[in-house]
Image 1 (cartoon, rainbow, N blue to C red):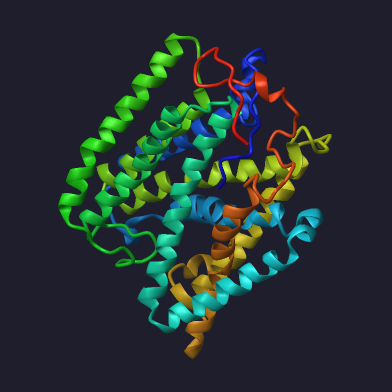
Image 2: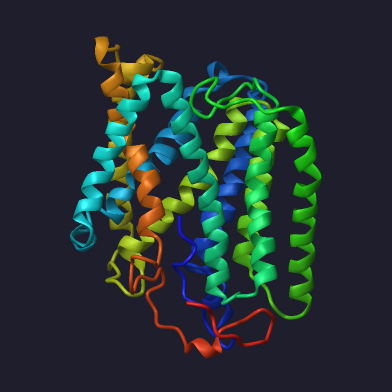
Length: 382
């Protein structure tokens, strides 16, 4: 996800408008609420004895709630940003047609080299997507308050990347684990020293970020949305990957804080932006939106389970025999994921999307935005 959607606002604007990408309640629920749900689910898992198990020990209700209704559903929400938006579809019809086709052809080529090659490439593409999304949220909050200072950007970038990359390095350095991104063996092992060397850098970056945020708050400047994203990312990724060796813990901490904010973003873009028409009854489009992505997610997972996994017969029914078509069918079923990963790096960027802004407001002259200090105005770079 790009980091250039939000427009900076003036220091004189009300805090409720200056601090948040969507609104105070929506931002707090999307980021803080999703993290709270993840941690609450961990508490439930501890009570039920699920924090020491592998995939076979993770109950179906966890998979339905976290994977089907959030993770797979947020992939399909790209439809509302691109393929169900006639104006957007007309802007780049070639790109939007070629990305799914190219993804499928690339998948067929990778699968021909072996299923392990295909799943490893898909896993690392997914990892890149997950890491970049958290970075994107941080940059959005910086842009929202007009933070343009280079040292602050460097520290913010280092901190949010380490908040995600260090747990991933720890994971690679402590294989095998009781959980996998897609399938066991889809990550390549690293020597244990890699995690040992990165750990002090990780804690130092988090400490420097916290100290700088407290110092700036003491001097009259705060960016609570950015701090919330950094905090929730660091906590959930560390707990779900480093602290626990559990498929259940990884699932509930990994997908909820990733998928829920993205669903909010797409819904807000499609229906709730100040620049667009607001529905008289906002609950009706919420229902349409969720019903659509949930139905598509169910249909996709039904095909995966019947043709490939054969794991949830109680939910999807008996298996189908794919015969010798696995090399074509598996990449085809992965097309929604591949399309989402690629288009997510295109459609949220200001570059190539002239005039697009998340909030849809023309805020203030550029000479009046917040700069590197609490009260120092600085013209932003364009």
